[in-house]
Length: 56
Image (cartoon, rainbow, N blue to C red; front, side, top):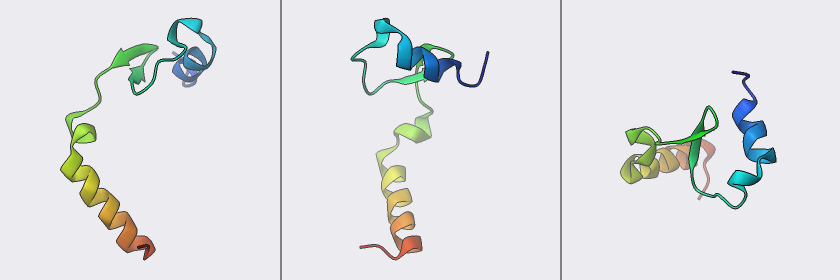
């Protein structure tokens, strides 16, 4: 498949109009990796980014 296939599918296919909050792979809904759904890990990543950019 083309690298832009899923992006084009989501932009142009009326079947997915209004679909939000889903993760797609090869034009299909897929489950994100466990680490991508880890709220504590997301918080640590956010804090690290804030520290690296010296943001508050």
